[in-house]
Length: 224
Image (tube, rainbow, N blue to C red; front, side):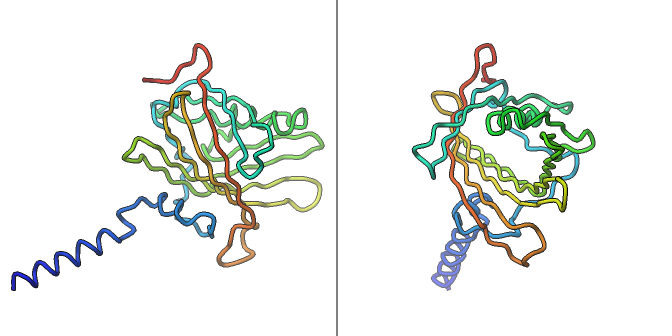
């Protein structure tokens, strides 16, 4: 009888250790890279929900981003800012950050970026030529890891409003952040999907890998 109980306990332990519940949802998502499909395990945020960062993100940073699929390319360099919102949460300054990286990529083609005052998850970028790029976060999940790292995954719907029918695309970006000697180091895994409604289960049509380094700018060191 005792042996049978021990055997059952052993089997139960093996089942639990093999259960996906013991790894975070985002760690499971990362392990399936690059074979990503939609729907993704990312809850839809409410208008007040935002991506909440650890306190060591606070401040103004210089960000260098390397495209690991194109090792010959020069890094993309821009600024990023993280600040407290009205509820005491540390969030990204989305309009500032989008404008900073957009000006590097698009130059004078990008005129301005505005946050939707009614939603923390929607932005509108105005471009020359009467073009508008609407970006909405449609799925998000985040996780603080036991080793001090921070995982965040967002799925966004982008709509380019131009003369003629709008053009839609969906982009998922999973980021793994860790503190390092220079400030913050990060890896990103990104997938682009076809517009919604074309297939019941969508496979990624393109994937990319990036490596980032955040260096605090003078006078704006992160929180201890």
